[in-house]
Image 1 (cartoon, rainbow, N blue to C red):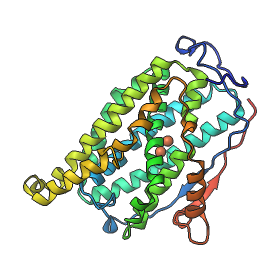
Image 2: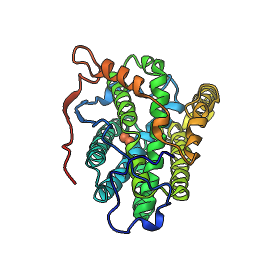
Image 3: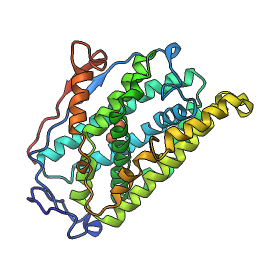
Image 4: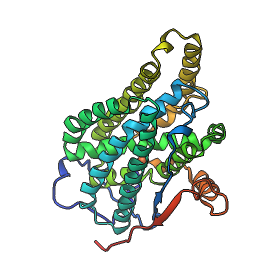
Length: 326
Ligand SMILES: [Fe+2]
Ligand SMILES: [Fe+2]
């Protein structure tokens, strides 16, 4: 690991027992860009939902529909954890970036909830899944000690970075959505911002803790939740919405294709990104080792330009957090 210039430090000894001497180095964040908090108003229409928006698949789309319901709870955990840890940071740039992370995640959570209401009106088990997730988070994840939550936050943000990069590299997936611009915009916006803020949680983790074993613990929890629990939620959706799918050959044909879309080593969302996912295990891993800056510039220029950008159509304002002296 590059032991770079030390510009920030921890307050007090809260994190001391979780720190690893050679890992809890702090870095120079002065070269890092500030990122904005963008506000949107999509005005989703329940009658215009494309419920097979992910590559025209029923079951693979259901994974993302389940993810949309569960991720609002994960984002709320990220917000709570980031807010708590921001107070321990002294680097003003990193602090402002954490404020942007909190703002971006708060708006993701709010707008996904609006989209989840659309799912609810289309017979998705939103109420049931919210109930289950609330219990898992209220009595499980949210009760964890703050350093563990910080490692979980970094793990969650690793997965959203992997997903975002996969989506950015596969623009054709979005080109297939021709009849539901708002769903397309929602996921492209979320992709863009997850990539934009992908290093913030990790930088906070390395600044305040850096403990490798704890980081692996957070990664394990994020893996179980995002790959296994969300997949289970997605798997049940088609049967809850339409029990006749059990005996419908066309559904099982879709199911086989969907498993490939998610897990094929050549082209699957998680199958083809295993190397990226597991790179997190490398002791000197950093999210920016996977450079997505050119993709980010491409999508910002394409989606946010005022003339005909898809996201510009729905964006209501953009604010940059102020840099405050420590
Ligand atoms: Fe998010
Ligand atoms: Fe995020």
